[in-house]
Image (cartoon, rainbow over all chains, first blue to last red; front, side, top):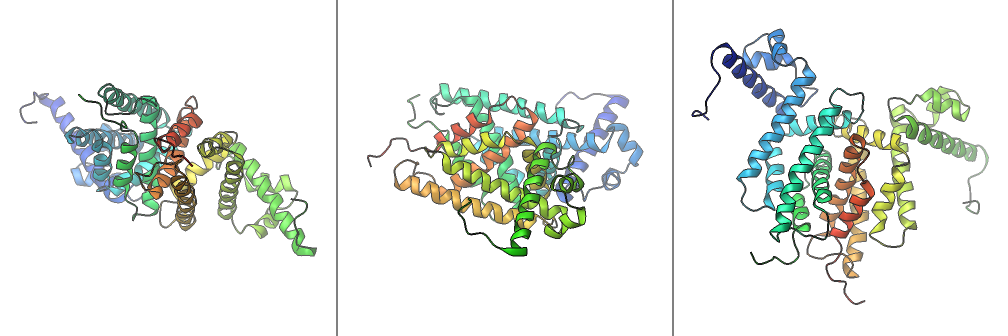
Amino acid sequence: MTNQRKPRGPYRKGVERREQILQAALEVFAQHGDRGSSLQEIADRVGVTQPALLHYFGSREELLLAVIEQRDTLGRHVSAETKKPGDIAAQAVRHSMDQPGLIRLFVALSAAATDPAHTAHSFFVDRYQNLTNLISSGLEEGQRAGQVRTDEPADQMARLLLAVMDGLQIQWLLDPSIDMPAMVATFTRMYTAWLPASA
Amino acid sequence: MTNQRKPRGPYRKGVERREQILQAALEVFAQHGDRGSSLQEIADRVGVTQPALLHYFGSREELLLAVIEQRDTLGRHVSAETKKPGDIAAQAVRHSMDQPGLIRLFVALSAAATDPAHTAHSFFVDRYQNLTNLISSGLEEGQRAGQVRTDEPADQMARLLLAVMDGLQIQWLLDPSIDMPAMVATFTRMYTAWLPASA
């Protein structure tokens, strides 16, 4: 990270401040979820005023969405670290369990955003379309490599994987004793090719 | 239904009135979802006052849960009508799509109920445990009959099926062009035994 070319001057300061706020929001939401988190607490953590915070993120809503987006990005980083394709999703889910507040936030916001009048509606429409495309490409690659079963369409299995992750989050919040990563791993084995092709 | 032994007298009237209210609530919620539905509209439909309605269902909340419970029961009726085991879930989902208001209601309420302080919390904890047991028994039967794969545990596949249905509802509300029943059917094929055993 330190070797990356960074923006300079006042703009650079703005970018850094924005990242600090996002990080603080991520931590506060991860800890308290949506309802228990205040903009004031986030502002306090960064050492700015609430109006200053709103200069970077126009509204509480916008900050929430940035946090969800950041969470997806973190999930992808975690994913990239895993070696075996089947572990990716289970690993991302295991990582997400360290931040139950973000899971609560995501469940509440994604449900509310199904209302076409909700400000986050188009954000979530795009999110699912983009993630479907991303996962679908990965599964198609796996199909070509003989690792993923070819008797079912990749795009449907991609949407099923997203559905599994969303649905299990609800079940896990209701009953934290269920083993989310194990069930995601079960699902990934269900889309594995029956007989591994020789490479 | 007409041949069933029914309760008599004032109690019977109460049972019938309760059923009328539940049916009206089902229709109103199915049409408008949670936010667009008022107790007054439900009361008007049955021809009772709002206090009379609340005599049968102590609160709006209680009526909502009775509607969700009724929806699960209807889903099971639809399920029982299907012949092939793999079709059951897809059929239930196809049926549910006729009542998008109930899907919206379910998505909103199940998300809110993940909060342990929510009045519907224990209702939903029990709902998932009971449905998991029910589906799990069916899958175990399928495993013994050689129709369901035996390399993954039935209870995990049961929870995955519930997760798939919940997760796809969210995706479908966000993008009604996705083919929910087809994707549920894909999932049920994924838990089908690789090679049908001879019976």
